[in-house]
Image 1 (cartoon, helix red, strand yellow):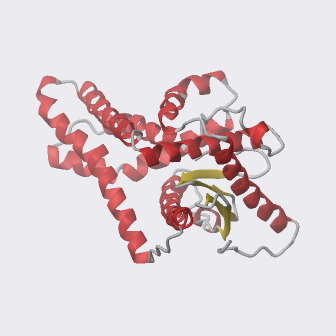
Image 2 (cartoon, rainbow, N blue to C red):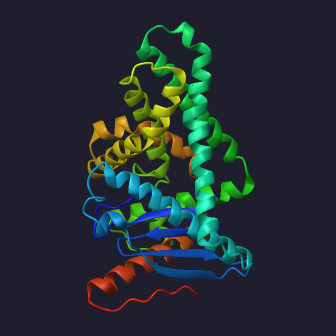
Image 3 (cartoon, rainbow, N blue to C red):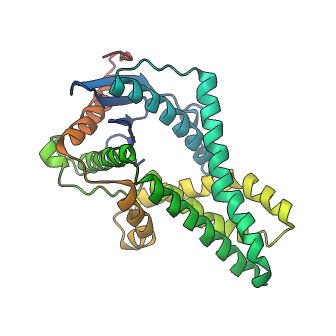
Length: 305
């Protein structure tokens, strides 16, 4: 989910047959309907990291932003399903909360607890704590890569990855002051240094260093530490990804974050012009809302289209 460093900070997310774009004050969602028309919705965006100074502090803001992004992502996803299938599927806040909790438990279990369980089986072979943590970290990264590779083979996910590529292309065109036309956006790469995929890989790498500082405590305590330190790891990773965005033109930064770009070759695909049109539509809507608000106009949400 890249964020621009030019006029406005804008992030994005691919959904079912659509793209969500998020600015400071608004977020928009453009979805291709079955009849090939485009549904565009606009919603107000209120982040705790902006409204609360403490929650906006470095390292703390990363954890808050991650939770907010997950909640917003589920909401955008539910809207996109309704528009792309013309089915009226409504999720209550309770259902959304349960879905997020299930997703978090799955991620923590597979990518933090499971590697520790696997690591226990070969712990006797590595007396050096640093080497052991490196091996456990390698298992964590391999599980992450395996999960992405398996998911990427699903037909519907392949189209989501195309929209992911369209989102990246659109934001990069904006960063380079291009006029928002399909032919201008099309030429840009689907890879972006501030992508959420890169963020997740950074989390895996940062975890290796953080866990190494704890040595090798008893097994159950080790699992507890792995879980409790996830917010710390997320906070550090968030600051690193923002730093990468700020200095994205520097060669050293590009070299360090190159593995994340390589991983995006799996999570993004080359979009067609119709998908780029969707990304541009979503982007233009949120930018117009930000412009209108900046000029003093009253901007209303448009939840129907």
